[in-house]
Image 1: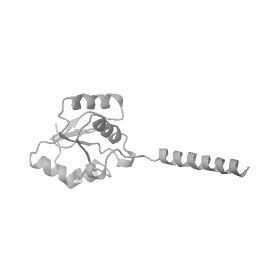
Image 2: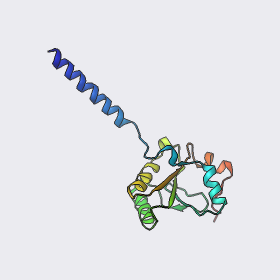
Image 3: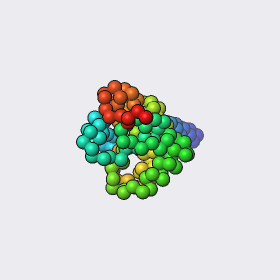
Image 4: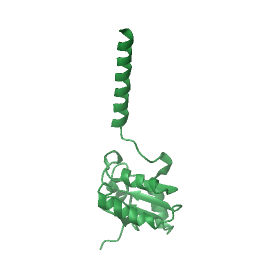
Length: 146
């Protein structure tokens, strides 16, 4: 009887642990794959021609390519098509900026796509708050108004 109770307790403990881990949102990028906004702004200002891709609703950064919201099938497919012609060793920088990272529906699917396509230098622009606070208010380069 004690053994059965012990085994039941162990099973419950393992199940709860699994549920807790699954409930946590994990990020597919490492800390060294996050790019500070000041670093990207310097690259743009120095005409280093980085491949910068907006995977969210509004591509405001100078020189960035817009593929649309990566949490939507159409946006992720457009990103995949764009990336299919890019050298896998090229540094690719993605960003969204619609909201804080912890709530963003776009950066994780986009970054996972970069990883699944075997890009060796995937980067994510570190926008912990939003594009306004972390880019625009710092006076970093924006696309010209049309």
